[in-house]
Length: 233
Image (cartoon, rainbow, N blue to C red):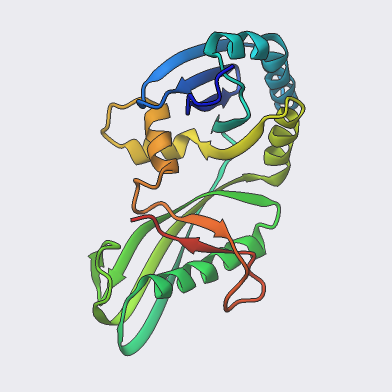
C-alpha cells in the first residue's frame, strides 16, 4: 500500500450514523463510506463505532490503497458544553501583543478547568477583543492601549467520552489526531457553502484566526498550566 498519498481521514459521528471521509492532497473528498444504525443509548455509539471498523476497515484501506493510522473525529452530538468567559486588563499605557493575549487566555483556561474538571476542551475561540472600548481583531497588535477586554468561548466534551473514542480506535492502531464539534464547524462556516469536512480541515490547518490552538510545552509563568496557547496567523 502507498505511504505517500497524504490523505486526511475524517469520521463524522452522530447518534445514528457514522460517515467516513477521505480528503486527498488536492483538498477534494475522494471517498465516502456511510454506516447507519439504531442507537438506544450513548454506550451503543461506541460499540457501533467499533462495529464500523470491524466490518469496513480492511475494505476501506484496500479501496484507498493506504493504511489508516491517523483520523479526525467530528462529533455531531448534543452533550457538548459551551461556556463564554471574559477578562479585563487595565494599564495606563502598554502595547498589546500576542504574549499578553496568550497570558489572558491562560488565566481564562485555568478558570474554566477549575470548575469543569471532568470536561475536555475541544475548541477555544476568541469571540471578542475590545481595546479601549472598540472591537478589534488579532491583527491589531503592537498598539498602545489603556484597557483590554477579552471574551472567549470554550467548547468541551466529557473526558470519559473523549477517552472512550480514543480507546476504541486504538484497538485498530488508529490515532485520534483531533476531535472537533460539528456545531462549532457549522458556526464557523457561517454562510459558506463548503462541505463540513473542508471547513474542519481549514480549522485544523489554522486558517480561522479566532480559533486558538494550543501546543504542549513546559509552563513559562504559571506552574499549574500544562499547555500554552499559540496563534496561527
